[in-house]
Amino acid sequence: MTPRSVEAFKRTGVLPQEILYPTLQMFTDPRDKSPEIAQIKLQAAIDARKNLMKLLVSEYQTIQHLEREGKWHPEEQLQRSTMSKINNA
Image 1 (cartoon, rainbow, N blue to C red):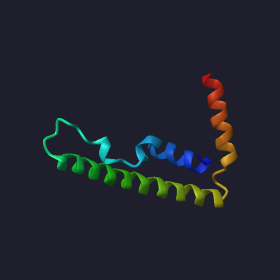
Image 2 (cartoon, rainbow, N blue to C red):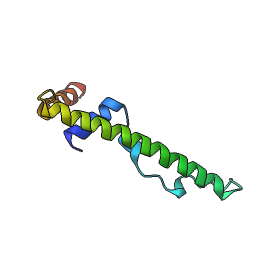
Image 3 (cartoon, rainbow, N blue to C red):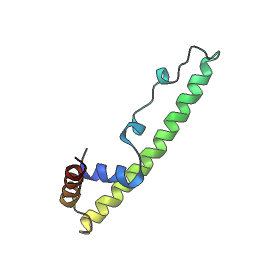
Image 4 (cartoon, rainbow, N blue to C red):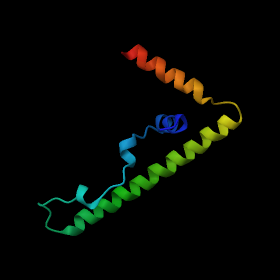
């Protein structure tokens, strides 16, 4: 991931695994009597993913805007991340 992407995830609180594209197999349960249930769950997951992606894209664009204005620097974010990892080790 790019420094901007990492920052967008951090600012929104979205986890990378939350935007993995859902598949029907993720929601298929042999105990369900109706295959429509899995389809409904899948559609809900797709809709939730779309909302998260919109949020991430919006935040990413905000970060790009801040960077152009000189108010956000990816190098500083990388240094903070590195220092945080060192301090937590």
